Image (cartoon, rainbow, N blue to C red; front, side, top):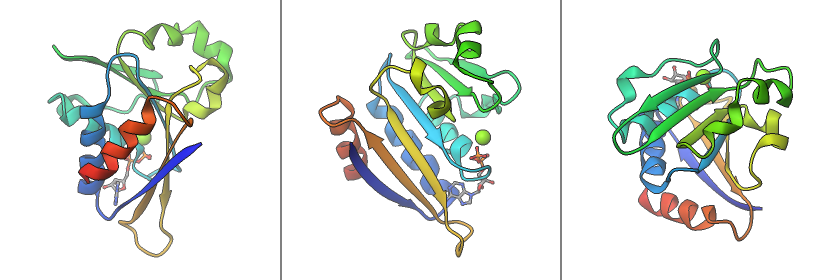
Length: 158
Ligand SMILES: Nc1ncnc2c1ncn2[C@@H]1O[C@H](COP(=O)(O)OP(=O)(O)O)[C@@H](O)[C@H]1O
Ligand SMILES: [Mg+2]
């Protein structure tokens, strides 16, 4: 596992990191976001969408599992799979068909890790117990995956 850690001290920091990551990803790339309620998963996706000028359309996919954002550059699919019973339900909604159609950002995606491609970026967001605006963002990818270089660039840009 290859890991980097970044500190976000404000919602704006998290937006910026999300936006920077968007500049480095392409069609077929997958990011999984894990973190308790209010940790900033959706805030991160909002920043990601800023790169495509789609941030104003953001809504939480909690009730419909996946929201689609279409720009002339890319399709972005924002999932929240927390409410899925198991991976079979993900197949039932045709979830894996989205992987090749654009960039997927999957809140709680590790719950369906058996249907995910073996390489993806896993972002774990931790809330600080002392400072209400502080978040630790841990990025984990497989050694030797194409995402190692992307994480190095992400860290350099911040
Ligand atoms: N450093 C930070 N990064 C992201 N969000 C932050 C930060 N500090 C405070 N916040 C606040 O925490 C909340 C995160 O909400 P949200 O992104 O919806 O979380 P989640 O999707 O993980 O439930 C927002 O109200 C945001 O303003
Ligand atoms: Mg959310």
